[in-house]
Amino acid sequence: MIALLLFLQTAAAQSALVVRDGPAQVMVPVTASGGERTVRADALMSAMGGALVHGPSQRFTLVLSRGRLELVDGVPFARLDTLMIPLSRPPLVRGGFLYLPYQ
Image 1 (cartoon, rainbow, N blue to C red):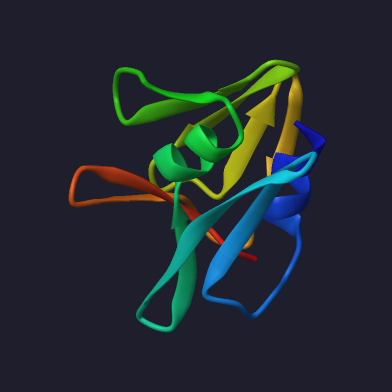
Image 2: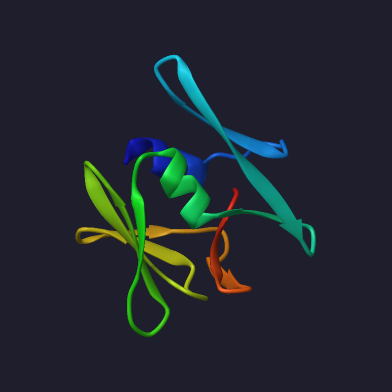
């Protein structure tokens, strides 16, 4: 969960995010649209051994072994239990996929 929060809070200028688990690593593509970098939530969760759950009303939950991060399409906050985490810009659904800000 900490790795995901660091991802959401850390700036970097690269075209792929490297997710490492011991010696194994997975590259998750970073896309740019309108000059803003994003990453597909389903690809990130797959690389991190988690899951993306699509709920009602464009609500999404990123499920990892240590916690659940809740997001809403177009809302610049994430919720971890009762903690609200501000995002630099909102996660957005494009082409049926949830994209997270790469900040």
